[in-house]
Length: 427
Image 1 (tube, one colour):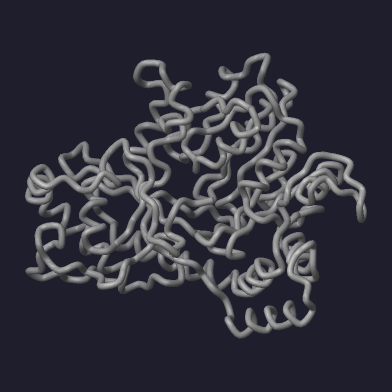
Image 2: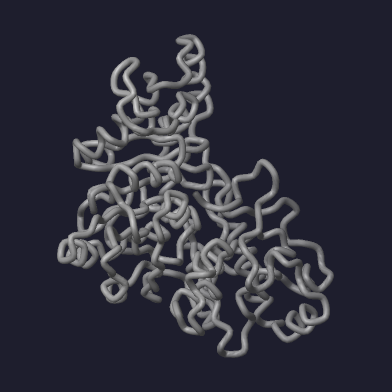
């Protein structure tokens, strides 16, 4: 696919017309066959069964188990509640080691239950938690390790499992990004004691809002099922603490409909990833994170690292250029949990506390993809990036005189998406 020629076009940030009339979002919702979805809604309404483990939720769970291959894959109302419930069901407490470079819900799921997240640095190549740094963080209060398969690229599960076994720790994975991916010929869902998926609207498979807990432990699954239903065992016997973490029938209908199109969604994501690779090839200032592995991947994220060490634009400068063109790229997961207000007290150590996290968080850019984005869109985005780098002196001078809004400046937290859009934070 050739790079689109921008001719004598003026970049929007320099006063030109935006390349896109309508915003190009990261994570616009994928929707499968709407007629099949409507038929499922009609069936649901005719039954008058909208929640409480209805037929659609049961069917969705069976399909998840079939695809993941675990003994259990329990649907939940969202992935954050799934994490909170699983953490409690596993008996975690004290301190749990977790990467800082993740969506803040990973840390919140611990902190909100009085468990201290101990932030670990990442491997700068994979962006995942660095096992070599985990062991030094273990204290007598440590009860577990919570790994994150960031961007759907699996953690070093073997190294983390060996550390956990050596120290008698629980091992849990946040697999919010990794549904339908595999690692060492084993589907994500089988690692650790449990793994948690997200089916948030931004994910390539969504249930409007939802999640799931995958585990091969019958005992853990029983606890999770009880806890997402207020602690009930049977019809009217409450035997434990719990919450309302059940998935609704409407969400399950959306999930089943989207699972019908899973292969199509993955194919579109992979096509978009390859288009970006072609468009950005040869730009020393932009490195696209490699998503290929020889194993199944969902390709739902296109992640670039922006390197200004050679005199190019910074990530935030490039982000301002793209936003002016209505390309709403995102700087996931900036600035790292350890620098967010609820956790800054833990990061008081002088500079370099999590150097790889800080460095990567200042460089990462998530580019628009999904079924709402096509090859021509990507070629235009590529042309804008090429032009911005070619005119970096003018862009930088303009930004120095007219800084972008706070949401696009360094050290700000994530900007929220427009009302009703699913371009906001990733669950």
